[in-house]
Image 1 (tube, rainbow, N blue to C red):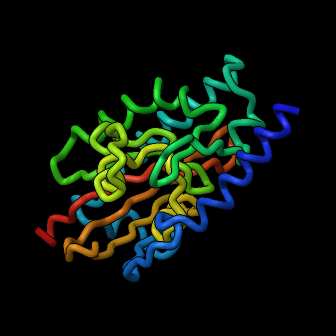
Image 2 (cartoon, rainbow, N blue to C red; image 1 turned 135 degrees about the horizontal axis):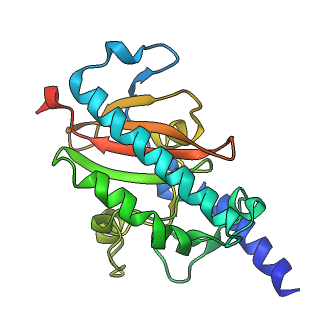
Length: 216
């Protein structure tokens, strides 16, 4: 009975996420550059360098997730599942899963290593195909203060992102996807994503957000 209730709440959590500001936030139309329409050879120097970082991060994350299933720390069914358990007293809403603590343990260091490569990199994260980010960078994983405006900026881990850019990244199957768009501050940033495959199946993506050199 307890497992059934928890499963129901977890599924409800995903439905609720679609109604949150994170999911409903309007976003400026992005300029898209995808492997489906653009060759890697035509990318500029910064794009090629960051694509190399993203590819390496994707491989390391995939290997980490596969290691979890091989060691039976989590089943493949749960890893690919869509159960998100609402965390109490969290605003904006945050969610735990059957595997997010494994991500905190093993994925964070991989993300932070990429973040340290360049001051132009704003974030480097793993996202599942439903838009869930189990472990955000430390700079965006600060304890919640109760001030929603502050927490929306500084406490962004374990959230489900259903905005246009996040879902395009999470659903993309092409070798790479660059999405360039202006923030509401007027700053231009680029979201680069590369698919993450686990045992050959599409699980989600890694995303690197950065400031393009030509916009500085």
